[in-house]
Image (cartoon, rainbow, N blue to C red):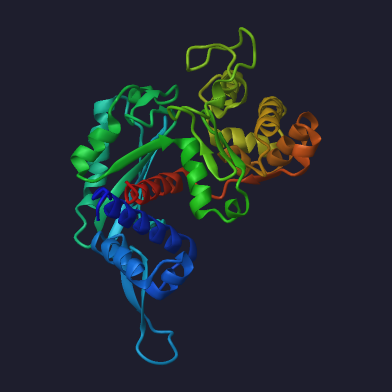
Amino acid sequence: MKGVSPARPKLLSKLNQSIVLDSIRQHGPSTRAEMSSRLGVTFPTANKAVAALLEARLLEEYDDDHVSRGRPAKRVRLATEFAQVIGVELDGRTCQIVAAGFDGKSLPSTLASFSTPSSYPQLLSTLENQLRPLLSSETKTTLGIGVTVPGLVDRSDQTVHFSANLPILNQQPIVENISSFAGVPCTMVHDSHALCLAECMFGTDAEHSQSFVMLVHRVGIGLGVMINGQFLTGRDGFAGEIGHAPMIANGRRCSCGRKGCLETVASEWSMLQELSKQIERTATMQELIVLAEKGDSFVMDLLTQSCHFLAMTVANVINLFNPGIVYVHGRLFREVPWLMGKLEKETGQMALTPAMERCEFRLAGTSLLDGSIATIIDHIISLRQS
């Protein structure tokens, strides 16, 4: 056709594929006729997109035996039987790996974990050894690998520009390195961003709210933000490092090199530092939780201080972004039940009342491994658009 770029039909075809994938992800297994009707496209258009996705092993076809009359209908679903994605969670203490179907359901038998190595070459070597059995599967094609990290991930070059809690990753081309030895696409995001993706993709509540925030409370503290259906990552992808918001003038030195950051007064790391001084040996999270359950006065004071500074932070977040839900991800909030109520109450005393009244506080329903899986699924779907 005159005046029409030859690239346009190809682009439209890929857009249709992306729309079909997203439709099946949201609505479940479907026939071609159902997709044609749901998406408002012709049957041949839906059929062509499905054919391309079947060839790419992103979809699988099966007979629907529940049809009451006639031949079984052919339905397509996200690939699970012959394809997989792999999620990798990198952390300052422990790293984890798991495989999942393209529908995001993880395969518990593939779960592996290891202590975080002390150097980047050791980390790469360990990852390669741990990933090799999954990559060499005779029954499943690996579609890609998603990685979550506690650090500033540049969206353009996929490098960690700075990680206070996992410095061996700083300026390292880990995505390029993993993709090179694995031979499949790899993508990486900040852990708080990954948790937002996981809640959107797999969570039970996020679908009802287009505006929510994700507070990550671990060794470090991070924030993910979804407003009006748009994920806020900032110009480079560095948004969300709320753990390094200044709180105490000339306070304790933070792992980032500055003084008085939120992480120095409210993170797991800061509380374990104080408890270790108190008991004159290295304390563990399990010990801190047990002491909290017993009502130990020293630990209760630590939790009260942490909750106060977190509430100040969340109040600012609510005033700035007006979210419908505040999700909290962290072991302490899961295992010390009263902590969430205390955080919500103190936040309510500081946030603007109209915004606070319409905001719910909930424990995150997904994990960082879920986030790494959501990250690679989202990446693969986005590749069908380009």
